[in-house]
Each structure stands twice: as structure tokens, then as C-alpha cells.
Image (cartoon, rainbow over all chains, first blue to last red; front, top):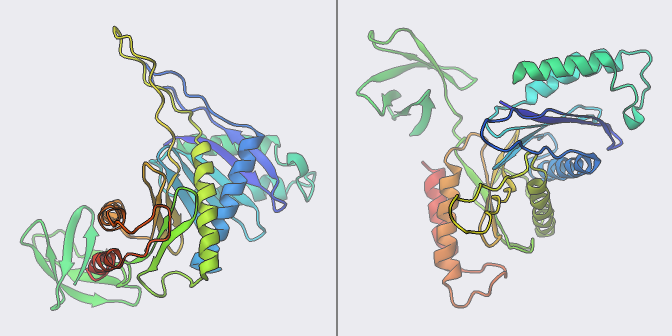
Length: 146
Length: 216
């Protein structure tokens, strides 16, 4: 399984955290080019927001959008009751990552961001999110999956 | 009669509550079924232990509805096969949904994290360099209550099939629906391209095909 990137969006639809991992290079093929950037985060937010609303309209208010897959990648989505949204992009072969995103929320976000006395309530521009413990914990957790 | 799978072997349950395995002559009797739709079976001595098999609920192999979107994002066909699977929404909402999905589909193709690379040209020939395979857009969407499969034809027409989350072989179903569309819509001399589909025979063939799946 390969994890390409990970995003967190706050309740004001702002992207407060981005991280991407280079996929391992297969010998004999040109190095894959990872596309990242702030535009990508906006596109991803628009996509998951539209799909979430579509799913709620069709499946009822208790329905939740879990993931979608294209021929090249798979996007996993998890939303907390406070409208904090976690998005992870992996390769197509990976199983459901919903519990993984939930674990990231419980064990990393709540522990290292919410319980951090120095972190602000609103994470404008990612303030308070990119602290060392969160960064390290996330990287270790994701590398453990791969 | 219901079909469920245990590992890779298929089995079916007949009216006398006996389980038959498709790949062997083994058969076992059902002992009890609890409220969580779990069924306990007594197996013959040649089997190692009592098996606990979780049965899929009676509704779990259902096609809910079909939507066809033309290449401009307009809704041209919309049919519900099973009431109660999805919320009822107005025709106007369906039109909005089709347009939204059309846009989202284009964005999901752009979001591809690994940029497609062109295969290297065959050495020794003077051919122009190959183009990379274009990224496909959204193919399968999963939610807690349903699963949606999208089939994008080469001309940009999209077939969206809404099914139960546990539905299998949806790509076969959707290809078959595309066949029906090609046979009874595209070959209809009175059908004008990109316009809403009003073909009686397509309706009938589609309905009987889906009924076959839903009653299996």
C-alpha cells in the first residue's frame, strides 16, 4: 500500500495541514512526479464537499461519504462531528482507511493539537497543527502502514 | 434462495434451510439464526469445526437506480428500480446532481497524485513519441448506505449505477446496460443525440434485466 498525501481541513473550509509522501520508485521507470500545492488542496476540498453533499442528499442525513476510487488513486474521507475533515490519498489497492483516519484524529489530533495549551482554538494558516509531536507521530504512523 | 460467499467458495441456501457448496457435494444444515443475521451451521465430521457464517441481509444485492449523464453534464435518463434504497429527490435536484457530478468527475481526473508517464517509443522506429494514458475520473464511490459505480464511455457519456454497498460484479452489470443503450437507444432512428432518452423498448429491456439481478 502506498500513501500519497494527507490533508486536514478545518470547519472554515481552510486547509490547515498538508503532507505528502513520495511513492517508492520502481527500478527501470522514470520517477513519478507528485503534484501538490495549495491549488490541489482547494480542488480536493471542493470535490469532497460536493460529494459529501451529494451523498447526504441521496442516502439521507445519517449517511457518510467514505471513499472514492479512480483508475489511478483512491481518496478516503473522514469527518468529525465538529466538521473537521481528514482526507487521505492512497493507491487503488488499499482497503478502507476510515479507521486509520479515525485513529489519526483520536491519537494524534486530539492528543497533540487539541490538548496542546499553546495551540490556538482556530488553526488559521495551520497555526498550532504543525508541531513536532504531531508531525513525528503522523509520519511514523503512516510509514508503519506502508 | 440467496447466494453468499464464504471465503472464495460460493454456497447457496435452499428452502429446506440446507447449505450447498457450489464447488463440492458438501451440504450442511442450518442450526440457528440470531437477530444479527448471523447463522450457525452444523457441519459434517470431515469439517474441522463449527462454522460461523455471517449472511448478507435479504436486501443486500439490490440495484437502486440508474442515471445517464450526457457529455455536457445534462441528465438524459433517470430510473429508480428499488424504492427505499435512496432518498426520493425531485427531478430538479437530479438535474443539479448530474451537473455537479459531471464537474466533480473532471476534477477527480485532475487530482491524480502520480502524473501519467508516456511509454517510451519503440527503439529503431521513427514513430512520434507516445502520449501518456489519460487519468480516469471517479470510478467507484462508497458511502455507508450505498455504492455508486460510474462508467465513462469514450464519448463522455456517463452511466451511474447506485447499488447496495455489498453488491459485486457491478462493472459487468454496467457494461450490459451500456450494451442495451447501444442497441436500443443509439440504434433508434428517432432518438436525437444528447437528448433525454424516451425509448420504450430500452425501458422494458433494462427493467427486465435489473429485475433479474434484484430477484436473484
